[in-house]
Image 1 (spheres, rainbow, N blue to C red):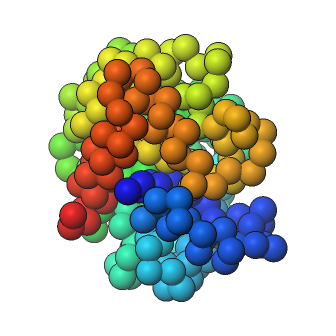
Image 2: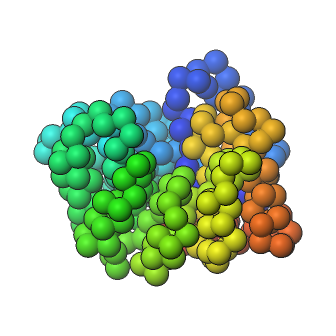
Length: 256
């Protein structure tokens, strides 16, 4: 059984065949999916997906590229939405210094405020970090660590930082990038970090694994990610799927 811990099926890339794609996942062994909100409009779309599909869960939160959409009133709306059935976490939230759509100070402010909301609501967090590894880690360590659980989505940092996140109790999200030839650091991370702290994710429609790199992604392609992890770990793909399934349930507070 496969658990996709991070997907974006509300994306416009699925407008023509969303229902067909989602209803076909079970045939590929995908039993649960968490749809991740990123911008304001995706919050309600995520809730609707959780209501329509029994195996789809969701998160609510605002990505660092969209924090200019936030204000205190909207943060309270996110709080109320986080209490809905099948909303499991606050996310994706964090820092993105690649595009710099918003200033560093604004990103940090709303990152911290959403982390505090997660603690107040006793929900785990889904963390986005791009070109901001040190600032993200320091905020996670100082503001959130030791409270609610969380996952560092699409982990792209060093082995050393991965070890520090594990010490703080966080999971690392591993997706299609681990199948890329040039992902040497991520492969080392997977080799070094215990399987007990890894979860599978797609970030679909993005980051399709080899041999589908560059094409629209979907949860049924996680078998390629699991196989890559198994090869690096020297174990069977089924073991990776089973252990990450259990990890995802613990991360999101779901009963096995």
